[in-house]
Length: 245
Image 1 (cartoon, rainbow, N blue to C red):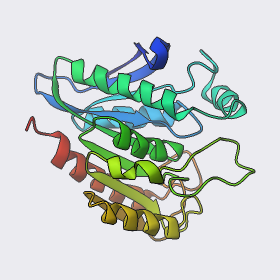
Image 2: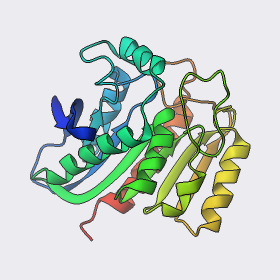
Image 3: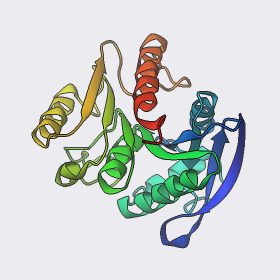
């Protein structure tokens, strides 16, 4: 595989930074847009992007905070983004759309692209799947999908209840039973709504896991749960991205 920093034209034709990882070889492969968590475009997210390439996918992660703090550390950029109220949904969709288009333009692309997001990126992954053209989507413990954040929360968020009927691809949801954002009740409410809309989805909730159980740099990391959840990701994307049909 190979990995590099590139630049794209995102929402409003803004120049934005992104991290691209690709498998080597001549085989045509699917693509994955990785949406980073609230702490930002950091080393752990780049490692996830490389992990997809190691499993045979073109993968790209856009620095959603490129405008707030170009060239800054991920911590400083995340702080600047929080101070400005976070990434507006319209801008997020423009940047994700540009990333998906870039993946589809690669010479080894098979034209199938999925999206995955963690934490705030989980909500943004679901929003992207309800607003853009994707072949598969993964929501990793995305909060504030059906309920508004508390007043103490640093970012402005609107719920996604009004766009769920537009979900245009299969969805995989991965959640922790001990998570507070989202709670298991919120996950069940989302399950009910997606069922009512007749959507293709599967949810997995893991006992003994809270928020950010994928994050190897945090005390919340649960290795056994993360391995099991990664297996679900590989099966899911394998079923939906590894074909040109």
